[in-house]
Image 1 (cartoon, rainbow, N blue to C red):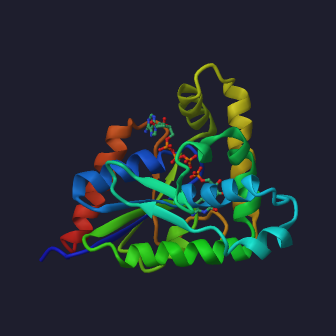
Image 2 (tube, rainbow, N blue to C red; image 1 turned 60 degrees about the vertical axis):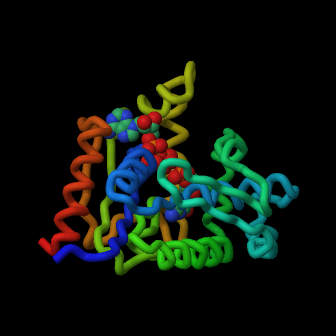
Length: 225
Ligand SMILES: Nc1ncnc2c1ncn2[C@@H]1O[C@H](COP(=O)(O)OP(=O)(O)OP(=O)(O)O)[C@@H](O)[C@H]1O
Ligand SMILES: Nc1ccn([C@@H]2O[C@H](COP(=O)(O)O)[C@@H](O)[C@H]2O)c(=O)n1
């Protein structure tokens, strides 16, 4: 018998296709979708906007509870607001991207955002696809299905450079690897593959192939296979 709700955790380094895959899988299967990177970017945007010293973890920790972050989970139009302001654009700036790893490493920030993520996941009536870095290991360790997406640095840099028109592929590659290193080496809840996650190397797969692979894995899980 098919299960009523399904919780899917998709983790992996930057540019492996987590957001594109998760959104499409959720839309196809009628599930909610949560971009947890957007939440860390949103709190980073708030810190920058309010003049908090990003180099000072205790200053970040002291105000981690202040901003109210709200995530809309419709995969056809995910939203993110901070204290009622739409920050979907501002959280994608180079400044936020370069600072987000420092902010997301602060334990008080992670505790706050993890609580929010769990509450959103538990309220998703038909189930949810949650993507990030520590979803399978920490946020939702009992997820029905855990996927860990990987891809070579070259494939990831080429994808990102395609998005950021005119950007240098080598510089993009270095920036991706720097962020991965920071996210993998932090003490609290680092980027890691859960022991029971299915690893999918997307380097030589089209986005459509990755989506089909994940949809099949979810359907098998739902069917109790
Ligand atoms: N299998 C694929 N083949 C080719 N391009 C892809 C593939 N998967 C994703 N892409 C493209 O790569 C870019 C990065 O994908 P996406 O934003 O989904 O990655 P991500 O893992 O969520 O990255 P980040 O963690 O940095 O947010 C997008 O332009 C997307 O369209
Ligand atoms: N579960 C997560 C998700 C993200 N982060 C941090 O946010 C940064 C931005 O993530 P994107 O997916 O939007 O690129 C990422 O580099 C991490 O620092 C996290 O810590 N945990």
